[in-house]
Image 1 (cartoon, rainbow, N blue to C red):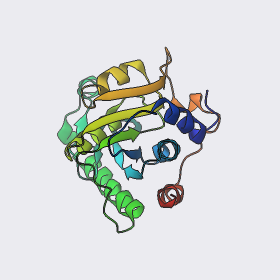
Image 2 (cartoon, rainbow, N blue to C red):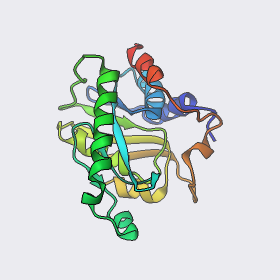
Image 3 (cartoon, rainbow, N blue to C red):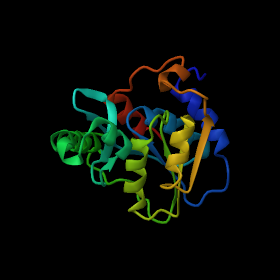
Image 4 (cartoon, rainbow, N blue to C red):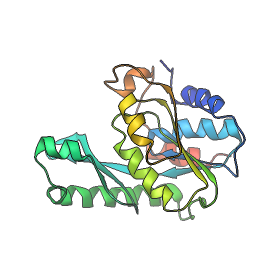
Length: 207
């Protein structure tokens, strides 16, 4: 178990020490930015942010059946849709609301500046955990549109099935812990308090 996100990020950063080509660390907002900040400091690489939003099932907003970014394509968990008897068009209203929130957060975090260029660089996408993998897949596909040299997804803890499922969207997955049974990411942290927008903005402004 990790004491907190920053400590987890320091461990992850050590695991990622290697020869990179013009590296860029991207944190998945919000909690992933805390982990990514520690990774970026360890590697001496710049830090930026990616916003991906989960699309929740009707009446069960915490049960993610899809995800999207502010500008990328929408990803659906087809198995979850089948189980719930849903079609993507049934989620159109939720999708629109989540995309609007993704755009709001992206604008708030970037504060009028352009995102760090990703083309031709080794990009390391970081989150604080990988449960179903749907938000990570949405973020990865959006990043791939910018044609990075390589894209690596890194996380302190993840579900084995999600790690395997993500490998088709990135060049490599680095995961420190893959427990046999992963019920909740927060169980693997001593302090898993919700990260705020202000914390994300502060971390992005630090060298």
